[in-house]
Amino acid sequence: MAGEHILIIEDNPLNMELARDLLEARGYRVREASTAQEGIEAVRAEKPDLVLMDIQLPGMDGLTATRVLREDPNLADLKIVALTAHAMKGDEQKVLEAGCNGYISKPIDTRQFPKQIASFFEERLVIRE
Ligand code: MN
Image 1 (cartoon, protein in one colour):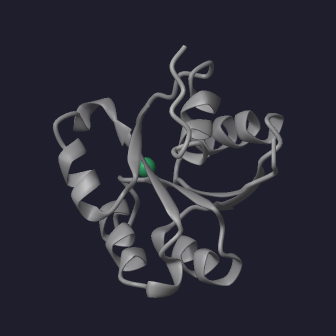
Image 2: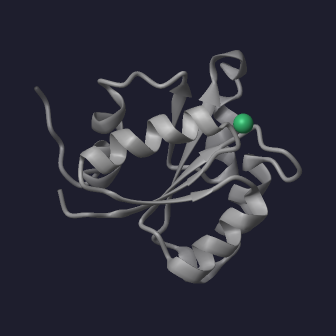
């Protein structure tokens, strides 16, 4: 692993801990934020490679936060991956329209999750197994 820097914006502590543990085990550098505002500040200060964006957050929601980040020309290379609850199935189009590169459904699948994340860093490679 190349040690890419991932910012997790997630208000649920258990979801945060699980995602963080899985990513750190793969060698990613992880930073946490529990609100959209805190996350936006961390993105601007630290320029992570990828943001894992919970959609349902207290205060500003993840779709709004994604739109804010997409308005910033300095963040053109930032990958944003939404974390969507199963109850939100059907809202996936909204996630993509807001500017996310893709989405991962919660609860996350602990075996698939690292592969899903890796795929966002390998999008120029077409891999068929
Ligand atoms: Mn949430």
